[in-house]
Image 1 (cartoon, rainbow, N blue to C red):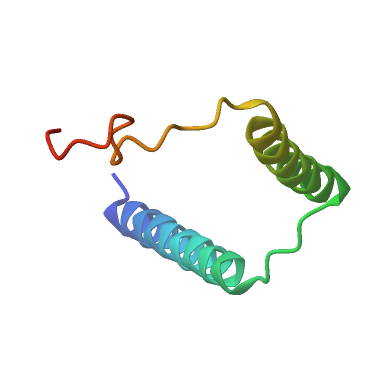
Image 2: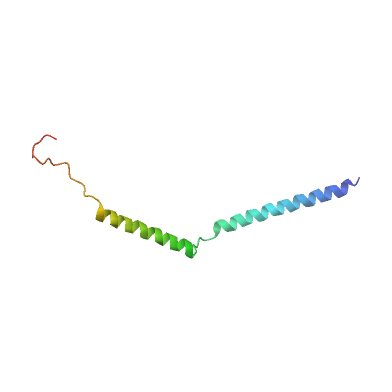
Length: 80
């Protein structure tokens, strides 16, 4: 058996795995520092959501039943 060859091959595989781990770490580091720039779909959906929220608030205030002030008694008595 040739143990020397096996050790060299194992060391080569270890180094290759360590290089791959380092490459993955660098890719994660680069992705984390990238500035987020949304594409046209993300911008369109964000604007659409904002429009739906503002329209919904206006519609709700237009068609909502006004609340009644219950702190004053219609009879004018002090009993509540």
